[in-house]
Every structure is written in structure tokens, then in C-alpha cells.
Image 1 (cartoon, rainbow, N blue to C red):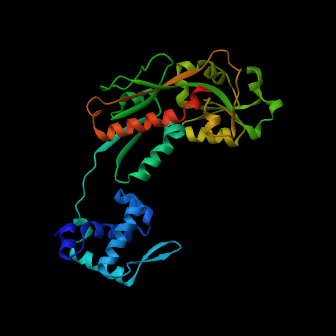
Image 2: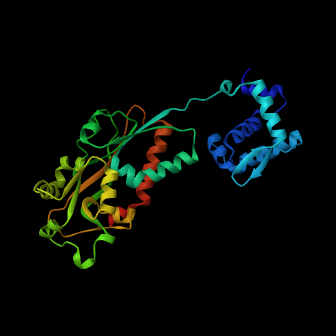
Image 3: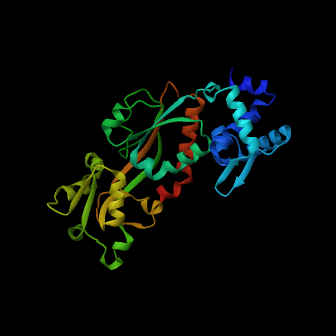
Length: 306
């Protein structure tokens, strides 16, 4: 007997019973509402209706969350006896594959993806980080967000995609933590960099437009740290008085970091591109991700125009 059938047999509205079952499991209205993909106010209304129908109190409110009352424990036992939770029907959600450049995921898109998951806990999302052109060429996804040169989306994904859309132009500059650099002591020429430890994200060594910076790093016989982790590179700059190459928007993302303009005559730029898989671009969940990415970049437009 399924969960829906068993609750009807017990004379309980299946929707109300499902709200009770998930609330009892989560012990938190907000978490239960996210799991059910409904608003917390609607969930509370369901529970009030169920308590009125059964003429009892099902939950005791505690500082740390919810606890089942004696009647709530009895109802939970009754429902478990009628139908085990594994028999409850589960609707399989389509898997959305999002491939995104590692730095863009960390700096720009991550917070909005977290907000999406908080609003819709039933979504199935496979997030693939791209840390090199080789990874971009090897990936297969429904939506791809990558970095390329200032004039062309190439090299791009190897599978068939929609017309790539340019989302933002990023300018890259050396950065240092404010707390480790007094204004008078900040470098204002390439020669001044000799007094500072440099940190290099290994992925950037393959970027043609970063040649001015990479040449300085490659000439170093000492005082340079090479890292394969983007987050660790940021931590080194924040906490170790290092100078590293970052997008100009980084001072918007982290107020403790400051750009060092004027050290290089040649600009170092990249473009953010997005495209969708031609086979799945019309699906609703894929369009939802595409719209989220567009909104994210539009909301942060001042990051890229400054």
C-alpha cells in the first residue's frame, strides 16, 4: 500500500499527512517547507488544518525546533505502520548539468545557486567546475559558462551549443590585501614588485591575455608560490601579504582586497560567455538556470563596468 493510499485509509488528507510527516522528520518548519517546495506559511496552514481535523496538538515548540507531542508520536507510528516511507511515490526530477568556470562559480554565481537550492530543495543539479581549456573541451552539460579571450568565445565547448552570449568583460589587475599594504608603500612599477611575494594560480599560466603578468612570474627565481586551488590563492592574498592577479571586480567581492593599477601597460582582459546545449535548451529547468545566470550578471553590472 502506498503512502497516499494508506493516509486515505486512515481518514487523513494525504497532503496534510505528507506535511506532518516531513515536518516531523525535519524538526524545522523552514527546512520542511523547502523539502516540500512550498512556503512555510502554507505548511503551517496544513498542520493547523490537520490538528483541527484530529482535534489534538501534534507538535511542541522548543527553542531548538519542533518536537512531536504524545499525539504526534502516536500519529507518526500509525502512519509508519500503514506504509513505510520508502513506499511513498517519488517524482524523479530532471538532472540539470551546469558547467562553470571555477572563478565565476566562486566569486559571482555561487551565492545565487545556494539561494536557488534553498527555494527549491527538490531540484537535481550537477555542478561541474572548469579549471582549464582541456576541461571545457571534455565536458558535456546543459548550460556552460566559460572564460575566453576578449574578442572571441573560442575555444568553447566541443558539443553543439546555442549561439554563445557575452555576459561581461573582465579586466585583470594585480591585487593585495589592504591590511598588508600602506598606501605609501604600495608598488607603482614592475620593479617595485621585487619586494613582494607573488602568488600564481596555475590555470592562469595558459591564458594568452595574461602574458604580461605570466612573464613577470616566470622570471622569478624566488618569492613566488604556484597553486592549483583558486580558493587557496585568494586566501594567500588575504592573509600572507602576497600579490596575485585577480579580476578588477574582486574589490567589490572582498572589501579587504585592493587592485594595483598602472603596473602593466598592456590590458589583461577576458570575456564571460554562456551557451546552452542545443538538445536541452528548450527544457524548463534549463531555461530556469539560464535566466538565473542572466539575472545574476545584470544585478552585478557595476562590478564589470567600473
